[in-house]
Image (cartoon, rainbow over all chains, first blue to last red; front, side, top):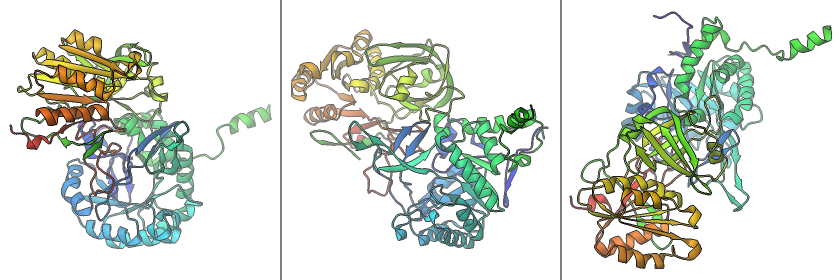
Amino acid sequence: MSEGPDLRVRIGSLELANPVMPASGCFGPELGQIVDLNSLGALVTKTVFADPRSGNPAHRLDETYGGMLNSVGIPSDGAEAFVERLLPRYLAWSPPTIVSIGGLTVEEYFDAADRLAGVPGIAAFEVNVSCPNLEAGGLEIGAVPEIVERVIAGVVARSPVPVIAKLTPNVTSIAAIARAAEAGGATALSAVNALQGMAVDARTRRARIGATTAGLTGPAIKPIALRCVWQASRAVSIPVIGIGGIADVDDALEFLLAGASAIQVGSATFTRPDTMVRLVDGLRQRLAEEGVASVGELVGTLDTRSSEHDLVTASAAG
Amino acid sequence: MSVQAERRSVPLARLPDSGPFAPVVPPPVLVEAPVADHRRVAAQYWRLSLAAPDIARQARPGQFVMLTVARPGEPAPVLPRPMAIYGVDSARGTVDVVYRVVGEGTSRLTGWRPGEPMVTVGPLGRGFVLRETMKRILLLGRGIGTCSLTSLAAEACAQGVRVVAVASARNPDALIGPDDYRAYGVEEVIDVVDSDGSSAVDVLAARLDAACADGVDEIFVCGSGRLLAAAADIADRTGAGVQVSLEAHMACGLGFCHGCAAGRPGLPHETPLVCADGPVFRYPDPAAVPA
């Protein structure tokens, strides 16, 4: 084995070769046509529902200042078709495959977990609790701590593999949601999913997105995502996977320092399809340059004195 | 699937994976392609030439590339831009696109200078199928949609296929392709514009009938629902087939973002995807055409 920084991270029983993985929805095995997916820490599927469902009407995408809006609507072929047709294409690669599951009711999550639990090759589940909750008037499932705990506990009870709760930022207290997921038995959290947003065309006076509202992602949401990771990681003792606007090594390090044990890359894969691979290489190089032996050494080590602090005290002393 | 055209809905089918209507689909690559040349070619249009020999060698007419407008180290604009391959020069190893400046992304794109390496993915999608049985073809392009047809014209002319090409636009400044069509050896170039009424469907239809008096084997369309409907009308009367290249918003170009799903909402499936199943589709269904 070559000398160099140790990039391995542990998410419960899951050992990853490095902390870099795709964010659900912004990835598919199709990317393997142009990028070596074997260099990633893990693969994460698009969200699978128990039963087939269609996506939203066009337009589904829009660009914003430093970000993008998407309202694809989580189309899914359903659990059985996923296992038969799509999962093998993920399993053709060596990194562990994390399967994202969703539902519009609590029972639908359990249904998806029931149908997927025990399927060979699934290394972990990531529970997408950002779906609209049909039982609560469309409020996100992930916005109510009690529901998050129920959903996670139910999936954990059905799953032989680690369960990651993917948190939504569209909440009053992400710490409360994080604690609820931990209480439900989650192995880890991932934070955050897209922020709710929308876009209007003033000239035509029409919505720019077919479903009117959409999820905002990309560099524009990074400060919010960092804050969420910071607050969530301080509220729980399980690992947090950071997501939100990560495009380069500095971004990744910022999330690690703020408390993330690993990171996911979403929109930046669209900008540059090789972003994740470059991040793995860049992290290795950067840690070596800074004399950091293991990526785990950095996790949650943020010095909360602002970086202007020394300047201020120096001038006060002068 | 179907596309809503102004006068009629034209049902389109995915080109098959095998048989006479199966497109050649080379594997895409990701390259950092230096800008070889970049210039304004009309009021709103720019032509960008990228040194991408691996793409130039493989690309088929009707395929596209995804161009990252964000410079290396810049995180935005977040979305790359899908662009039809206007032409390739396999000797020089260059891939050309022509684009219209419509917003922030394309206006930033105009700032790219020769030598700067642009993240480019391609060739992407399933392009046009030019069969040996097609001796005479008609190309119908409108506005920026013409950019999907120019490389097809070049290849068809090189193979001795007789080509009639229509370039339609709002006004003469927005016409793309007529000069290149003539340079490739297109037999008849018909440019029509809204500003003098020549692009009106009934006016154009009469000229198309005259141009197709010797018969037409296949019609290729991009950029206009009205032109697609006109092509389908000719096809119904003459037995010609129609291949149309669709345009859609997309983020990945490979098939995983699902931004470009063209299926009807409400159906429990997402296909076809314009990027991976298209962008070229056919009317009538190729499966219904005897080999």
